[in-house]
Length: 262
Ligand code: SF4
Image (cartoon, rainbow, N blue to C red; front, side):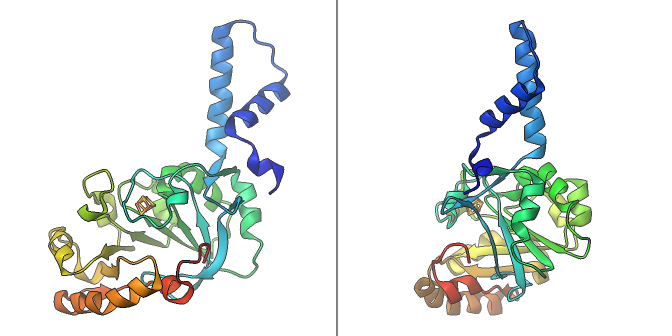
């Protein structure tokens, strides 16, 4: 792992502070200087999920939603405001590796020729300003999808730039730590789709009560491994037929089972 990824925010802040060569005598000035340095870093650094001690960036196929099957570059960010019981990316809920947007662009360029970026998490919108900085460095023709739990508002700049919002609200059984919420801003976007992870018919009442446009609702089985996925898929498919909504596959589970980073 390159040494720079391993540096903590505090270490980086200390280094910047030392490089500035500022000699600040009083504790009040020192406090202000620290706050400035730490704020500066907060503006420019992103926090990426860490897998096998490396930032989680990989090239694969989109596994879910309306673009399932499309080749895409994946970027997983660290940090989440929920704590879902069945979360299959628990390693991304906290911690992570700090990188500048420029460093993230370098990471993404390990593979050439891609034109679709899927940003997932964690909850990526917790890093909205950082994502703005990253996207400003990408070619305009790159299509950007953001996977979100629907509880954090995107910035106006992101609304303008993002191609597709994959909103995945968490139903009560997820025990996410907060009442299910879809911010109105997503309801107003014509490029937002709603993916619900369901166990079976018992979850429909909660989905139906949201009164979302049916053509934008997708159901997918609550299954992190292939065996459970295959067992549940026919039942979820029947739910979709019964209620007139779409079925979302989870191709990565079907193809690669529980293998991470795929
Ligand atoms: S919102 Fe997503 S990443 Fe966060 S805890 Fe729930 S399943 Fe995990």
